[in-house]
Length: 430
Ligand SMILES: *[C@@H]1O[C@H](CO)[C@@H](O)[C@H](O)[C@H]1NC(C)=O
Ligand SMILES: *[C@@H]1O[C@H](CO)[C@@H](O)[C@H](O)[C@H]1NC(C)=O
Ligand SMILES: *[C@@H]1O[C@H](CO)[C@@H](O)[C@H](O)[C@H]1NC(C)=O
Ligand SMILES: *[C@@H]1O[C@H](CO)[C@@H](O)[C@H](O)[C@H]1NC(C)=O
Image (cartoon, rainbow, N blue to C red):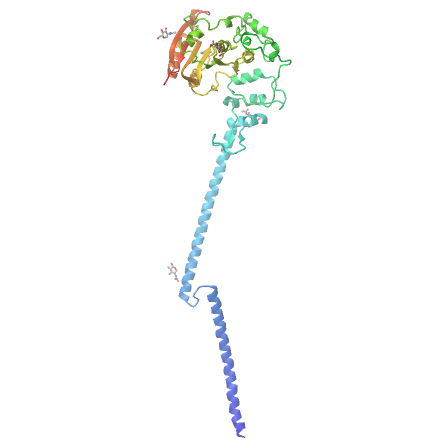
């Protein structure tokens, strides 16, 4: 019995403890889940989540950073916009440059044929930048005047590559004389004489008329050497009309010194120590007789000449002398201070524009060695030009006068006031 009574309160205590246990379990669960949450949060971020003020600060600074980013982005946008407009204006400038190129000399280039463009370049250097030239491409040399005549240049550059060149010597020389010098190179072969006859041996070659089959006659009025030799007797003006007759006036040129305009070669050479004049140039030397006479004195002379209605270059070469097909306008292809003597007869005269002549004289001075001689032989001009233009010009260039002779040219009458002067000039020693 008593156990029953005792049992009941026991049961109550038991029921109570079960409820408490349940509540405790729930509480424990809540605490645990919170702990887990806190644990997770503290693991994922270093934010002290429980500290609200610090959280606000953090938020505040994040907000500020965001605002800062916004202003940075708009700043970038502004810069981008200004860069875009810069690029646009640059492009516009480039386009206008190309346009202006097209409307000036660039247009001339674009009008050239492909072969002409290839001949005058530019070309990329296969090994890249060259420190020697300071460039990674090269423009083949061609006279600046060439681009002034795009149609003629294109015509000159029109041929079958690898085949025979057109017979256009006269046309080509006209282009040279207009200032397209040097001409561009071509990829064709010049016409070659049929049944070519080998040259005469030196020294006989110096005074022998070459074989007619040694050259091409297409460009000339005369079709053989007999015609050229006889030309001195025919009427009309021809360049160096009597020069092909080696038995005529050519035979005695520069052998006699008349104390006036005609200087003797030996008298000129006598102004310098024997053997000190060894190499030189004869500008516009006709058929090369000056070089022939100098060769007989063991002096090597290069003769520059055009082929104006006559095979002057071929004739000089046939004599065993060195011809050079360049006009008086071309910069001399010699290095400074190298030549012992420069001679020029008749060619340097008042037909050359004054300023160009001054450049020519400076160029002659450039290539002469100190103490070298410049023999200006029969320079033609009017009396007023002699003292008014040419004497001051020669002084200006810096030549020293070793000899000077002026004389009136009377064949057309004294009233024409036409003059010649001859001069032996020296490049001073420094
Ligand atoms: C947020 O920052 C600004 C400037 O730093 C300050 O003026 C402001 O009082 C801050 N606000 C809070 C809630 O910290
Ligand atoms: C270049 O060619 C164009 C079109 O053929 C022509 O109108 C222009 O006159 C030429 N320019 C020159 C400099 O020859
Ligand atoms: C030219 O040189 C040759 C060979 O050296 C010599 O025999 C001859 O005498 C020289 N002639 C003159 C004019 O100096
Ligand atoms: C040039 O000047 C020289 C010396 O002053 C004089 O003797 C000569 O007659 C002048 N010549 C001419 C062609 O005027």
